[in-house]
Image (cartoon, rainbow, N blue to C red; front, side, top):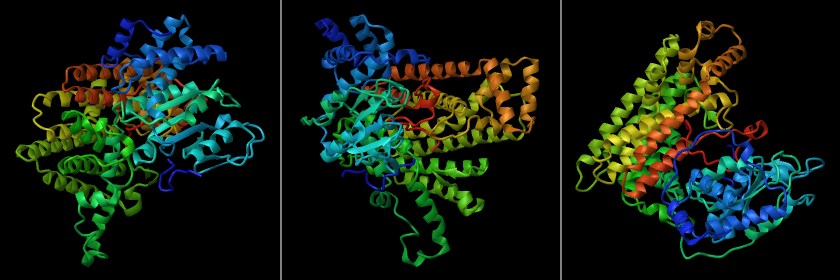
Length: 623
């Protein structure tokens, strides 16, 4: 039986030749404009097998001659899907279905070239018979191997005999982690269109070969699927001589590998912990706690940015590596050390943030100040900053003596900006008032969130050579990225974020100076301003009542829509900067950052929104 290793954390119609040429060109010219909107009317699965098979055949023909040098963005898939439906004279309600099939045939040849033991099969719990199902959930999902009462066991048993890793669960937020850990290189998944739509763009843009079979309905009860479509791929293996499509999985894995014990100790040798005379000494305690905190927890997104920026500046060779080889990349130690330094600075800021906000948990465990006390936690945060600068001082670059000093200067400015932003937030929270403008809120966002993106991106680029032509672009690009990211977090706070939050509106109750509140204050009438003033004073006492009053005012003043428009404006400004950048590998990486960091939230039915994604490729969070 093939299982995921125990050390993986589980918590967490053919076209004319000129039309084909246009489609090929579309793989390098990206339609960037998009608007967030309700998409439920576009996610209808064709009612008959005959129509589903027609669309499937047409999708395969349309993708056949498209260049496959890089992954699609979701906007490109949508454009191709609309073109496909127009050619077939079909209603746009089938758009989501068409997009899934187009994505399938973009990746199918590469997926079936992956050995079975390097693939994952994802099955949804709703395929089971809801009534009388004897199976129970274990740490890997639904344990149904010996049942045989429904189709899940057929797929699961066959896949495991072939060597697949198999998960049967309500959702799988650990899929990207499993891929980055190096256990899986491709995904065969079954899900409803509601889930597939939210995951598909992230799966494709990350460069993970994937093939999805849509369920016939999204009601999560005894649904069905075209079973033959599963077998078309499940049992097929046809090797390719080399990868066709570039992707960022090798760089993600390299970012994770930096913190594997052997590489971690090589790049950042312990000073006290490794010395026998200090083994049990209090002198080693701070280093022990700090090294453990740095090495564990988090998604390693910032180290990934540094590694990927360096690679992109030098032509993007790492994105064309075969992920299945799982071999370390040829990255200079200076770049690796800078990447670890970025993570050290980030982890230090989290320690201090947790103290300032009195947060109880981080990475599923008690925060450091809860475990060890505030004094020790502050000291650990300071120590991590020291570790970061120690690493930067060791980033020697031959024939470029100014590289390290340039990076250190940028890092120090990032620290200053971060402290200014955090200080401004705490100052307002201590004395909340209606004197908060949208410009004030966005300035705080730019100071708190953008410097981390900027430091990581600049470091990778600077270690790849002279960056004078990119200097201004990096700062402006990261400001738009950071502000848009923080506004999205505000919106998630109210919609509920299944990965990070259980109750909505927590930032509002904590009296943080959010953009949503600033927009409401600016648009409120006298009566609404009086209500807002009372809320800031803690009136009424009930958190629930104040949240409902605040939500009502936000809806009356159109706050949520205004915030979404500002996210879109941040995206458009970042894209305008990316469009002018060369080389192409760097331009593509900037687009990847935009699509990842500013991924739009889709409208999902409540029963789906409460579940995790089938494939969660969320690379960004406060972790």
